[in-house]
Image (cartoon, rainbow, N blue to C red; front, side, top):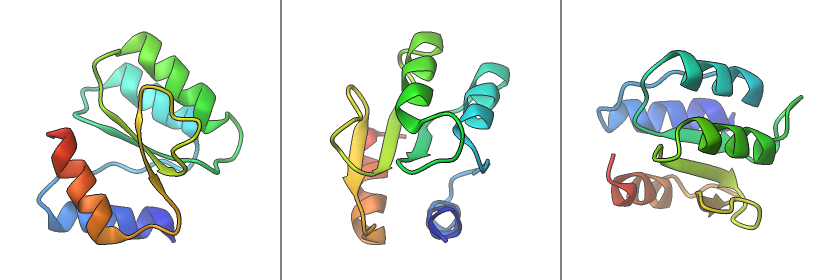
Amino acid sequence: MLVKNVYCVLRDEGFSVETVEHPALAVQKVMDGSFDMLVVDSEPFGLSAEDAVKIVRSIKPDLPILCVGTENWCGSASGVESPLDLEAFKRTVHAIGV
């Protein structure tokens, strides 16, 4: 449900959006492509979101990362708490400057 909500909000804001189900796939997409921002769910399956953020930071240190669900483990990434307020999410995405 979170992915669908975030996808719709970002598309409505005019962003091009790709979704994946697992953090490991997100890391692979970042390695293979060019993205302006990565949004990570804090409760993933498989590779932890925290580890995914660390890997992406090592590959693309300047890529903005937004963690959805908690601000506690994000480190150098921005975070928004759950339950997700979609208006606050939009403001955060725009504030990051994508």
